[in-house]
Image (cartoon, rainbow, N blue to C red; front, side):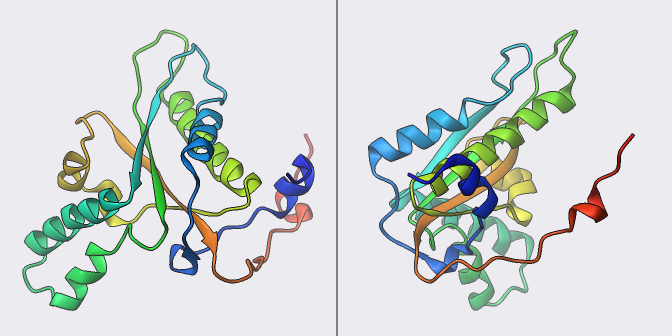
Length: 187
């Protein structure tokens, strides 16, 4: 397992189409989800939950996406609909991070939403620590009420992230990062 600081300094995303099987084992998935639930959570509200898309579930989710897309875009070509159908099938595992807020006198909704984001980042980091490639994506369908209903989300829930996880099929390259001198100020 890599050193924690080195892992954080070198973690990178890889496009799902550049991932292949195998994905995490059941024990590794449990570890990833456990780490995803171990985030700052003011008030102990757990304002997030996870949806695991693996195996045929990725295909079924793609059918939901394709059906909604075709209904809302009647002029779409079969090829365009097929692209939508395959949205979750490149990586062997996709974890949806669902965010919701609870009314609380001391914990504003914003903090609860940030907790869901922290959960998504922990999932990415845990997958990377286990040697997998991971990528946090959304897309139009992550904000479409009909798709979200098809995925089993309630009206007051949002899909904060879809974390695609798999084995890299090629080396992961870094991208330019901002210089600290451009993003850091001192008060």
